[in-house]
Length: 186
Image 1 (cartoon, rainbow, N blue to C red):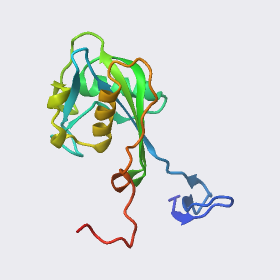
Image 2 (image 1 turned 90 degrees about the horizontal axis):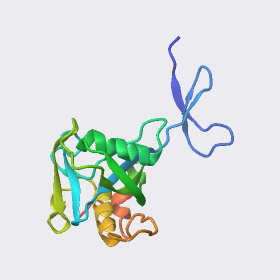
Image 3 (image 1 turned 60 degrees about the horizontal axis):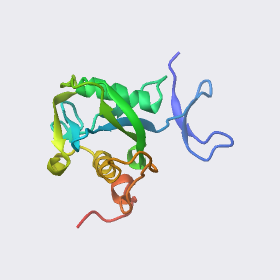
């Protein structure tokens, strides 16, 4: 029997949800969690990956991606380093939690160091390279959250403990949807 869904407000809920018209199943659509690592070294360099996939093909990013079911955020972050940079990483701290409600995402970014010296381009990367912090290709970074994580990493480089960061002040125009009746940019 084909299933047909319609938008309904279930009893006791304040949001419209996709509800099966046949059986009443409610399809809750929840935000996606992204996990990643700013991988640094004792020389002040960071490991970046040039994306081999869309979105933002050809741009640089910290190793990061969507969590899989059954993972913790730190496990997902370490797995992403392996998949994108073919490297094993020791995660030492949660660097920041960045929220992007416009696209229903929450980004958990960690700070870590490589275990060993081995790394290379995984299937989602065109290349992987170390960058001195001063030489990061800022204009070629794929995502704002990666930029924020790199800048926050620099603020706590060498600190053993610190409070995790969050979205920088004034970033709402990037992270939140434009109001429906707001004028286009001038």
